[in-house]
Image 1 (cartoon, rainbow, N blue to C red):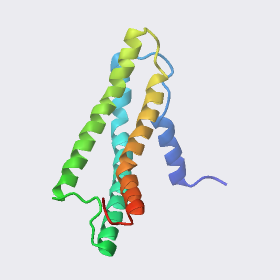
Image 2 (image 1 turned 45 degrees about the vertical axis):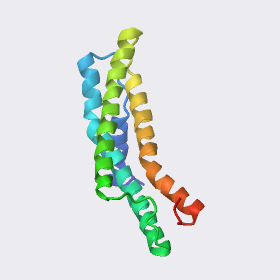
Image 3 (image 1 turned 60 degrees about the vertical axis):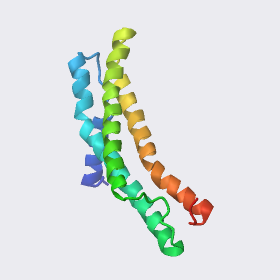
Image 4 (image 1 turned 45 degrees about the horizontal axis):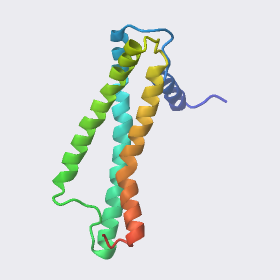
Length: 151
């Protein structure tokens, strides 16, 4: 039985996204490797952010509805938009640090780094996903431990 077309495409995309380079690359190739993955990285982190904010607001509004306390909601709500924009900027600054770090490792230790990029990309993306889920986790914990009564 053949896998569904969407599953095959997903596996191919994951294979490309996390692929190792086979040999030492010129610095321009290192930067290009990272920059080709910036959009998928932003899509992964962005989708996680939408999920995290959805959970955050669902719990916050659920607490407001049941207890009258808008748990975790900032005042004014515009702060959420500012925080999201700031988070996206900081996440991309750290992303840029991935290829800068790879180039520094190659230069300082004079080693070939063809596996460094995929490992750093994978770990960095995983860490970004975990950090992006923090607001949802915190509001859930706050709701559970305070019974939606706030601090």
